[in-house]
Image (cartoon, rainbow, N blue to C red):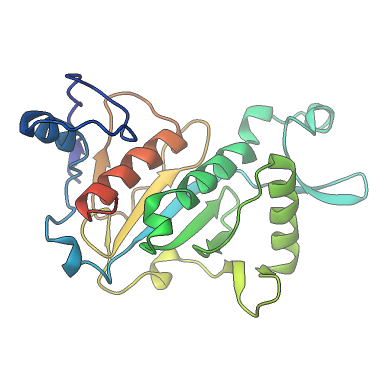
Length: 238
């Protein structure tokens, strides 16, 4: 399986992507080169209106347990004593990672422009969760953990005043939920797999290709940000 690396960004006249300065042709070329991920087509955006991206967050730590008399997602910020009594490693129970990753995805221009097809979460315990693009992810980790504990018990979370389900537990494997012509990592419809754990590697067995967006270790949030910006630039989403 071929491994490719995203080239470094030029530091000349560097500005935030939210800045309003006019750059010369060289600067634009240097900046664009940072976000040229392999396998993403260069066709004009008006030919890509029906194409989107699906993210899969692998090995998410959403471990439920009865703490006292309530069913909760284990979180070392809240359940430090419980984990200590059970002799469990608190670093393996990190729901904050998938929480931050989801909020990052839902706040992208990809999502706001309607180019996000879905987000799937594969937990450490093998549970597969589908999150619809219109779902609102709670700001606080405490409320997010409560929502996910309800989801794992009821198997779905419905939208207020609507019949649709914003989050639901679906059957494995992930491949049956993807478009027939999707390429894992490569070309539209695109499926991106990102680890949602503190340490380790994702299972690349079902991936068509593997790319690296940096020569250095990145958090899930930073990795998702770089991928999202690359796709936004390819599809001219401003």
